[in-house]
Image 1 (cartoon, rainbow, N blue to C red):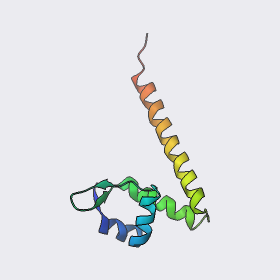
Image 2: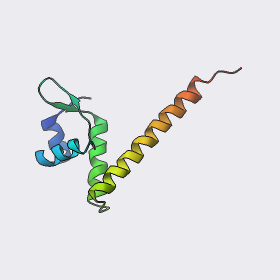
Image 3: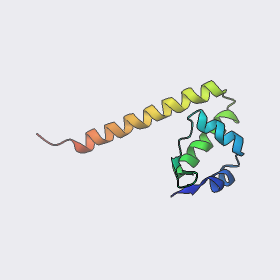
Length: 91
């Protein structure tokens, strides 16, 4: 599902400035639409994680970047493992 920037801001309860910071920090990487960035459901979930990390858990900016990098690495490894297992043939 493609989500417009205004819808994303509304659903995440973010302000424009915070969203711009999160994009510049590369915590969010929206696709570029015709006139503005567009977001996915995964971006919504990631925004929720960032809010939880900063708010509920009190993680600072540097810590958020490290945690998101580790989460991305785990997802990449899981994808690679699933493809390796799924693509394996009996010899």
